[in-house]
Image 1 (cartoon, rainbow, N blue to C red):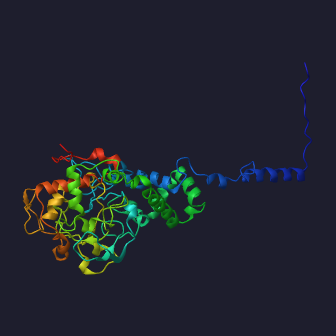
Image 2 (cartoon, one colour):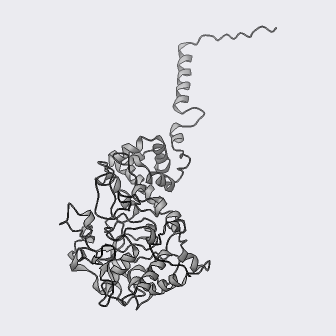
Image 3 (cartoon, helix red, strand yellow):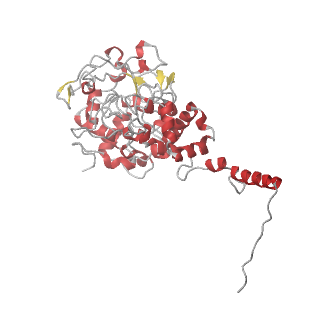
Length: 419
């Protein structure tokens, strides 16, 4: 058997020991093998390699609310066309969303954020109207929220986490602290925005909102693959009822739909079915969300800090009609539950309308919340409709539903298929 090898190490003198300590210390400081710990920290987490992917994760992050019960996706559910589809005790989607404390409510309906990426930044300007008897529009255009107070998607994303009746965290610093609780977020933010992203609360908060906005600009939120879009490509044909609804919708003389819900002169696949204009269309107060504040009126566009013209009171941004068939309830305050009701509400402004009663209440239409600024010229365009024409327009609006949400359409007594 071979004798074990013995190794003798001569004792180091002071200078040799000091030099060895310096070498070892420098290796530890650099992380060993010549790589730095800061470089390692800046590597993106798998699945969060881009700002959009990070934004998608943050969009569903409940830890960004005070009680950790609510995220952006709570009020904008990706599985339901990005609206709040939580049911109330009556089994219905409520008019307005409940906040993180399960008690607080606002007085405006949570709009879909599908196709919101095409909303221009808030400004005052003009736009051409194509299928309309009215002159071109001059006024405020675009912006996020019903009153346009957020110039763009990133500014909009900054608001909910620190809104006291929504996600309810007290300030931006509290939101950033919640981010830092999660090592994956810390590493991903540093990888995408720089190692010093958390040295400033405002910088980190801006990175948060930029990420969410990046997600909201991705293809799944604007697929342009509805039945209407597919018919334009010749992949299918609209039914007779849907085709009638389309003809009525785009008519310059029969209806006023296209005055505010047509963006382009041709029916291209990039049609968002909103002009981004602002109008007061005479919507009544939603008494179900005003039980404690019945005397408080919603001034709409006038509440936008960039607007001081009292003539803008009660006006709201024209919403997209894409996915409208699956994003009830309707109007800025969720006062109507059915598309049929909405079409009949528009029609009742005509002198010879046969729809003088709200079909959801069985009572006469209530007065506008803000009567002084109602867009009567636009509302009086066209002729009054009959029941068949109302149903045809509803059928056409249903064709504007993204393919992945078509299964959510409810018939509600209206048959759109050919017999």
